[in-house]
Length: 171
Image 1 (cartoon, rainbow, N blue to C red):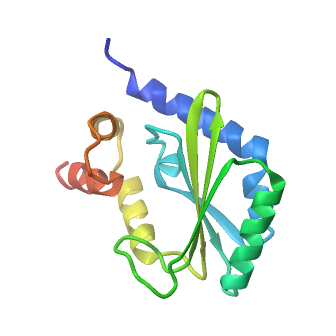
Image 2 (image 1 turned 120 degrees about the vertical axis):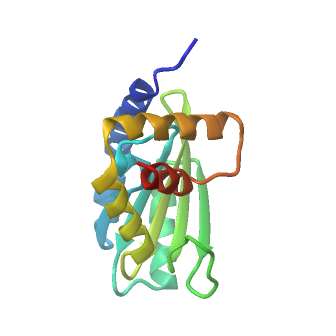
């Protein structure tokens, strides 16, 4: 049986909307800065339960990031929490900032919400998102969803951004 990946993506998008609404996460995080939704959610290319959020605040610091994490834990909307300080050590493809990972089960699916607390938007990500949005069409959207799905089910080590770049550079 062939899976309709456009239908799956639309269903995931609707579930992501419902999860964000149920938890009030975007509204809660907006108390700490400008919230941008990125990644496959923003591109309408979802293949699993993964949402990327960026909170932009020029005054973000370690203590404020810990306060935000504590607030998120006390709201009890998620059942797993990760925290990383990426301000001193660099990792390729990651912005300089504080990372909070939120995990939960919602509508019979595992969800991961990546929250990046940053002083400014990560320029390489912004540039890539603009490139993708300006080159995305229905044909290459289907190709991207197919490759992302195959990567997921085969457990291949290939990032979504690598898939986007490869497909959209060969149009």
